[in-house]
Image (cartoon, rainbow, N blue to C red; front, side, top):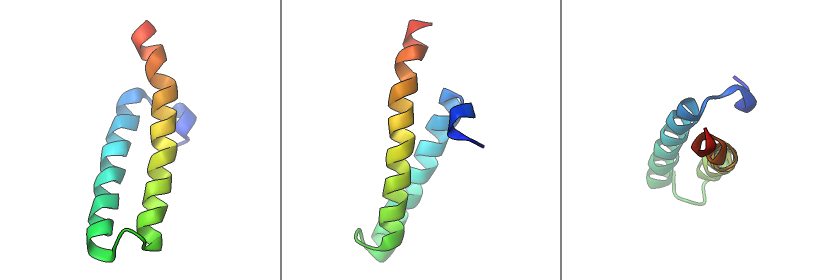
Length: 60
């Protein structure tokens, strides 16, 4: 699914799932492990998208 096609609820679910995966990876492998960094960067993309979409939801 493309990020542009996501609804706000789907995006919130994906953010929570990825956040949990990132935390678990950070605990198991360390915060500087490439997998932890990869999840963090992916989470940044989703959070930025969420921030851009959320104001529009509040206007509806």
